[in-house]
Amino acid sequence: MDAHRVIEELLAIPRQETPFASVYLDVSRNDEHQREATRVHLRDAIRRTVKGARTPQEVKALALAFEPVEEYVASVLRQRTDAGARGLALFSCPGGAIFRSIAARVPFREELSVASRACILPFILACEALPPILIAAIESDGAWLFEMDTGEVEVEARLDRSFPGSHRQGGWAPQRIAHHIGELRERNLRAVVQRLVELAGAAPRARIVLAGQGPTVKHFQAMLPTRLLERVARGGIPYPSGLEGGPLKDALFDAARALLEEERRGENRRERDRALALAPIGLCALEVHQTLMALAEGKVQHLFLDADLRGTGWECQTCLAPGAGAESRCDYCGGTRTPIPLPELLVRRAYEARAEVTLLSGDEQLPRGVSVAATLRAQPKEAGAQRERAAQEQPLVAPQFTHL
Image 1: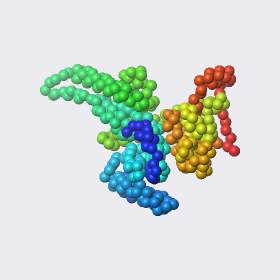
Image 2: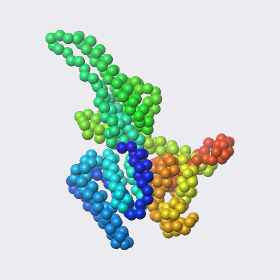
Image 3: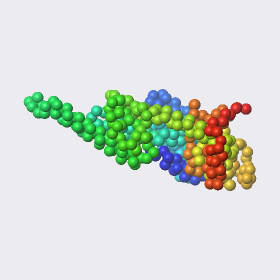
Image 4: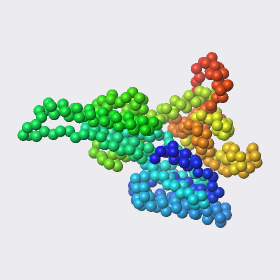
């Protein structure tokens, strides 16, 4: 599953006149009682949503939207459908003849929403933060190669070549056997390198994670071409012993994801600091309204957002202008506003504007009092002057903010 392509497909679904239900679930629980608790929790959340409808027509429309969702979730929890899934996303709008399920090997933050379009933020939080992963699990006699995207195995290959044995009635001398086995090991590793180069060329966004014992992995890494070395994650992961098939893939993916998440957190902190350093010269917006206006004008290059941001945003049904707050009428044309959770609005607008999006959590978060930051694309005439002014000044330091 290409997470970026899924997001583009969800964004391409037009606004609907009837309720559009988006449901995200964590279905990784193996215990039967926990799975039943998930089903009951979803059922109660649906009942509360339907009960909040204002008219009988809305009640009927919501019931129609949630009916296939409940049926599908019951099938998954009984492990009849998508048995290996850890996360499940469902999108339902009978009025628009829409029903889509997305099973992922990463759990989703549980959420239920009803709007005029698909809710994409929980999917981005779970799947888009990490790039596709190429895992090379190196053994002494060959390797497993896996191409994984959000935990789904896109490509799987076992590359090895059996070693010769010896016969007690005669055969090769022990020295020749050892030499031949060494040659076969090198041949096996060269074949793995060649296949890894092919996979990396076909997946330019993928990070490479090496699994295995230190000396073997170090020897294998020395055989990689230079253009691949910069895509190899530092540190590597151990090869899970005693595992085969699905458990082996799950263990490798979980370890690779943990390694890359730590790497990503460090990169997020560096990018955040670089963005904040641009604020004094006007190339970084640090306020929600300013960021929304820049997104509407296509000026945002990179959006940084605290993952726990809360608030209500809106979008005008007539002129499509975005904003924050709970007013009922558009400031620009007087049209009716559609309420949208603020994080969802910011992220959706950023993706539609082809801006890069980074969701920050923990020690990556923005300074206190700032919940959103957006680096801006400088206009050609302004860019030169701004670079000139920046060069004449002292090196910029990330500004400090005080919570008022």
